[in-house]
Image: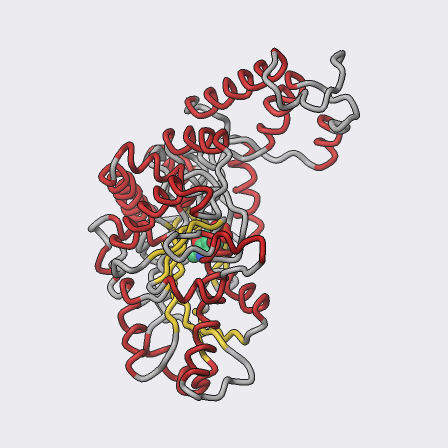
Length: 461
Ligand SMILES: *Cc1c(COP(=O)(O)O)cnc(C)c1O
């Protein structure tokens, strides 16, 4: 670099900064519109040290060099999560509109924390949240906020639940329990025990039934045993491992005799409520006190976004509003401050990419895309059942298929998975159920085809 390092060099508009912006946008355009990005595979730490070490220097390497390092080394060593043959964990499949708009959002430098600073984008995010609340059968008063992910959304909801239990029991003159407790299913997401640990509350795992569902009958004895210690029961709308949906209606009915907060973790699967095909599975969702769904999973938004909704948003404010002299200017009760509804203050308006895409294409396009994955899942499950060397572990409820290959042990699944990635045919991380290894497809990408999946099944013959 030959220029003098004037204080505003990186900020002012100059030939240098214009070139940087052009190159980065050009890369972004190419990546968004290129349907053929490689699946990719990780490099080792040693390989990356060799190919991309020493990037931080006093004088800088220049944008051309840094970007080319990203394009040639760093990006290809990341697995392309929106690749149609990415079938592991829960994939992402952001729409072109949502991804492109993410760039626009970044460019706009919006502070998504308060109405004062971000009214327009907060309004737009709230449009999406209200749309989701209606789809889930929550009352018009329901509202919430977009947070980073389901883990933080679940934790924020449970913090609200405990604060509400404390307040309500204190107001009614009831003693507070020595230890608070949450109940969740043996198939609940790993973010539940973590939330309990962070909150320092007891966590009781309630056995799911043979179909993997948490039912009112299973939960009732625990409510009877632990009484007022239990401030929340967490149910899943789409477990991560199986895509199983709990029996919400039977859980909600328990509240006739027991006082608890019903939180529904729908990070992955609640999206399926947008289509009619599986609507019956979701009976009772509308009676939740809070729920979460991750747009970065099956609602086609880029990382990272979890929509957290509360039946009574006031209760979240009571738990989460940060008080400080310098924040008092935000305390206008007329306005809606996203900071009040979760564990955060500064926040990206991460609901905006979904807003833009949903506003652009309309809900119908979303419904069609979700239906497509449900249909494909059904077809592949039938195909698995029809192949003598494969068997389903469970009938899929949503878009996760879990199956076994006769005669394979964990090492076989691991070697098969590595081979698939090595051959760039698919990314299928093996899973396990009750300690027995399984293969698993999670399907959310509308570009994933039956042929691609059959090709993967063929490799198991
Ligand atoms: C993915 C997932 C989570 C965690 O969400 P993050 O966005 O990864 O933090 C929680 N619950 C369920 C059911 C999930 O599928």
